[in-house]
Structures are given as C-alpha cells and as structure tokens.
Length: 247
Image (cartoon, rainbow, N blue to C red; front, side, top):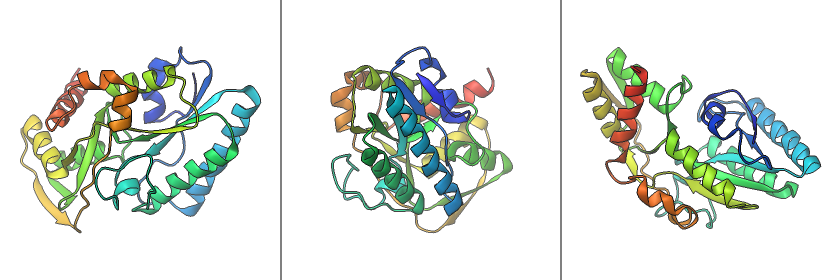
C-alpha cells in the first residue's frame, strides 16, 4: 500500500505498507475539526483530485479517510449509519462529506472509511486525547457538558482496515469505530486517575451526544466481536496510551 502523508494517521498505517499493493491510502489533509479555513479545505480537495487522478492512471484503489464523529453524525437520530442521508453538524463534517461526494463522482475505485477518534502514541497537538492529556497535566480541563466521543485504539484500527482492504471492497463506505461513545467527562476522570492528578473541570457550551453504527463493520469484519468493544473499552484504550508514554 502506498501511503500519502506523514502525520499521525500515516504513521498509524505503516504496518500495512507492505500489504495491499493495489491501494493508495490518502492519509494527509486537514485534520483540525475546528479552526480550519476555506483555503485549508480547498487544499485538501485539490490533493484528493490529484491522488484520484493518479489512481485512475495506475488502476489502484484510493483509500479515503472521512469522519464518523460529531461533525458527521451529530444531528443523526439514533446511531449514525453509512446508508442514510447525513446532515453534517459542523463545517468540518460538511467538508468531509463534500470530499466523499467528490471522490464518488470521480469514478475512481475507492473505499471510504468514516473514522471514530483514533488513539495512540504521537497524536497531533490539536487532537482530542493530546489536548485532554495536556489539560489534565496543566490542572484545568475545558469540556463541553454532555459531550461524548467514540475512541478506537490504533492497533484495533489497523486490524480492521487490513481486513476491509483484504475483502476487496470498492465503491463503499464503512464506519470504523467501537460503537460506544463515552462521555468526555469519564475520559478525563480516567486519565486523571491514571496520572494521579485532580484537575479542575470547566464546562462550556452544551455538548453533543452521538453514536456510531457498527452494524455494517461487524458484518464485514467478524473479528470485531473479539476486540472487546463495549462500555468499558475506552479504559483499555487510555491505559495503553499512558503505558506507551512510559515504555
């Protein structure tokens, strides 16, 4: 697999670099869920056009990473599904949905994966877990009251992506997540216990509760049933993250 990009997602995919030679993974572009400009979004759209043209010329499948988080499914009634009409909740979600539509219209072989929140070492400064860890250590955590997030360990994500690519899917869209959205306050509390800290919590605007449907994922990748996904899965994800920091 050819990997386009050098950031957190691209590094996450490196174990698959020697597999799936028929695939180009676009693991670059705008990763900020807030604060990006129209120029930032335009650059990612242009990059997608260029990589799609490359794949059309070589006959390779383009693996594109979208979002299954609040920006995409925040308005959904019930768990967000791949086969229903989506009304994006944020400009970032609208941008990712527009890129999905751009890719489908290109006619190139592709697979779109809508990701939950990947968690692993070397996350980008602005991403959820690095931000929460930094704030816990600094003593003050700012969070949206009632907000939830679906966390997915990078090792589990790699296994899932590997299986989906091996299945030969083309022209399809799949949610890749645990299926269990956890209150952000619970995530903060567990990080604080692991680090033996007691940060002050500050609450801002009302947060959004959402859920991601993994029905399609479970049908395509039966191994998901053995990954331990459930209400307490996030604790193992966070335990592994902190352990990796001290390895």
